[in-house]
Length: 73
Image 1: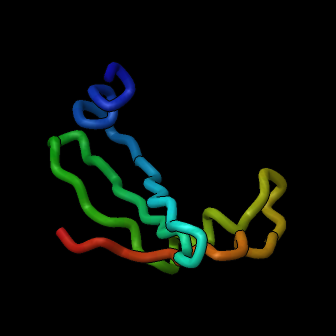
Image 2: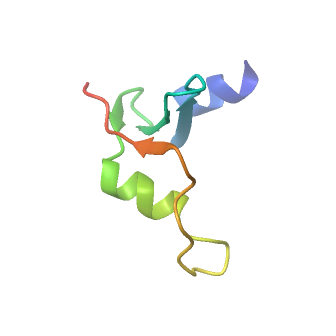
């Protein structure tokens, strides 16, 4: 709970993965929290770009059975 409190009261981001069943794909989306307590969604493109880049800045393939989405506010 302390981590969530820090995200809401300070600037931060959260990645959410909704695990699909045997036939379904996982959904991945992100949220950015501002220091004013408001949040906004991370775009599908930004989420995929961040998720498919390794720690050295090199492009890696997306995980199989994963769909990157943008939620609506």
